[in-house]
Length: 117
Image: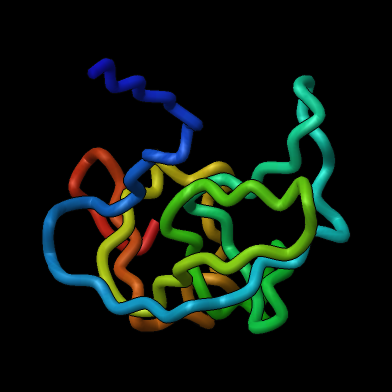
């Protein structure tokens, strides 16, 4: 029997280390996500979203998306982290001061081991 493995590009870890994190199921909104060169609408791991699942960079931020999410076919469920340690270098956009303040349960770490990006 032959087993085929297909990589869908969904394995990106944004966690800084193996410390526990806390997340919850959230729905990612697809309405403002642009298609990539392959016609896919992907919300990247590390994206910052509000409670409605829209990508934001202000004080409405509530969660960090744990893994890449394909929203090509519409809104999808994902894990939103609200407590833990995240590697800023693995985020698609660095968090603003408003985001850092809004998601106080997240410690944002840089490669130089400094926190609070």
